[in-house]
Amino acid sequence: MRLPYPIIAACGHISLTDTMASYSLFENPTKNEPVITVSALNQAVARLLEQNFPLTWISGEISNFTRAASGHWYFTLKDADAQVRAVMFRGRAQYASFTPREGDKVEVRAMVGLYTPRGDYQINVETIRRAGLGSLYETFLRLKAQLESEGLFDPTRKKDIPLFARRIAIVTSPNAAALRDVLSAFKRRAPHIELCIYPCPVQGEGAAAKIAQAIATASADPKNELIIVCRGGGSIEDLWAFNEEIVARTIVNCEIPVISGVGHETDFTIADFVADLRAPTPTAAAELAATAQQDWLASLDHQRQRLHRLMHRQLQNQSQQLDWTARRLVSPIASISSKRQNLQIAAQHLRQALQVPAQRGRTRLQQLQQNLLQKRPQVAVHQSRLRSESNAITMAMTNNLRQHQLRLTHLSEQLELLNPQRTLDRGYVILSQADGSLVRSAQQLEANQNFILRTATDLSDVQVKLIGKPRKS
Image (cartoon, rainbow, N blue to C red; front, side, top):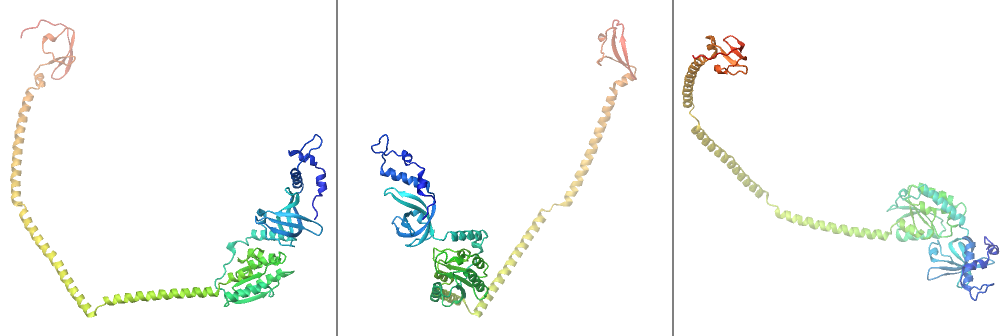
């Protein structure tokens, strides 16, 4: 094993004494030479290793592998010339894709460290993979990401597995143990299904193209209703043919559903992701492709018994219904006679229903006519009385009007006699002050006072110049 940095070069420029300056565990210190404990020494060395060796990929062979009760893995990683102790803690080991075995060639990504309690130099493993798988695995991841971005893994694109497939195509090697497992499973579970084998190599150079051709041939046969692509477990190199893009796209373009049963439960290939259904093993693929015949027979027997019970219950119900109907059934003659009697009774009720209201209506009409005759007014008498009263009113109004006319004439004559204009016509005048008040005596006269003199024909303004002694009339 060749480390990325020579340990001498890595430590040559770092002073161990300077590194120990941060530790306070000294025994009998002197002014010139400090003394440190073993714990401080191991901690300093561990710190130097961690600071100067980043995560590094290291290849080697597994030896003395132990899985502790705590879940941690302890093993030795070695090559032809050297070895190093390794530990992979449970938090990392649980994500490993496989459990290593004695003699496995692996590649680990680890940090160089020191187990300080014992002073043992070791590596702390973060990731483990089988040796030589780095480039293949990267190719696998790139193709997986590409196909996934194209939507080939989308569950909505995948087809449903038929429930009653009558013919199933099997694409695998005729010499593979997986084929024997699949045939045994079908013989045990569903011997009634017709199987058609499309042989092809499942590993090696050119295997992917032949697998794709076999799948396309099986898909083109209209008799096939389902395709199973399978092979047994193996390394990533053994299963690589099922990681090829040509196989993946051929599965996607199949006209009928495809079940992928490649490898063991922990093995995943590109074919598993693009297939319509992934089975963990070839035997599981056969089990998923067809329900066991015994299960179908048991289900049919259960349905038969259920149908028998339903029919028996229906017959019982119909029998009871027939008995109930028979008890209600009477002779047609008796039924007709009963209906005739009912009809006669109904006709009598109808006649009564029509006659009684009509008689009541006639009686009511007669009563109303009598009341009308009794309450009808004496039109001729009232007309004669109306004419007599109208004549009396006319005569009274005429007499009253004549009397008022006579009185009006008398009052008009009296008014005419009292009219001041007539007095003025006889030569008299009316003297009034400026404010319109009448002068009724000479005592109201004053010298140089203006007055209004009214004659029969006009009005004149006059002024009193001299007031003499009043004369007795």
